[in-house]
Length: 187
Image (tube, rainbow, N blue to C red):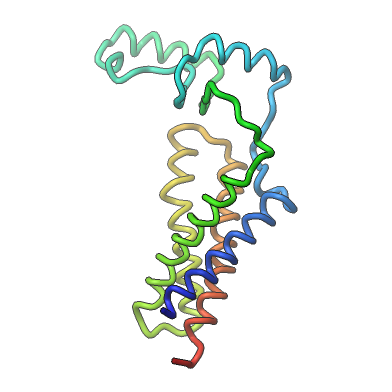
């Protein structure tokens, strides 16, 4: 039960930190840009992307990777043209209507914190070691997701660094709260 409560506490702390990082600090917006002509981009996407998914432009399919001519053409095109990684959804959604997204985010943060609380509860760690472990797990999550996106899909460096700040600081703060709770004497 102590691990469950520590996970709830950690989930609340991480969720609140992420809210601050995205709404009060520039961390959540690092690396994000808007095109000069948003309507033209929307029209081009609607005309050229039919299904929801991730589009890389220029792109190369797995089948084309077997064709030397296609690989050479892609390579030439990729060297001399802009690159875009687009998450495309053909149906619209009001980005200011965040109720469902906030609920899913809170659940995700809390489940993540429960995993961290479980790890913190595995040993007879002191307060500082528990905080260090939680922070290291935040760094681990960033290294396993954000760095590969930066490396392979060319996510902007400042976006990637913003993700690191959010994860590492968030798990440091959540780690402090969970370590405090787990370290309390009690039943």
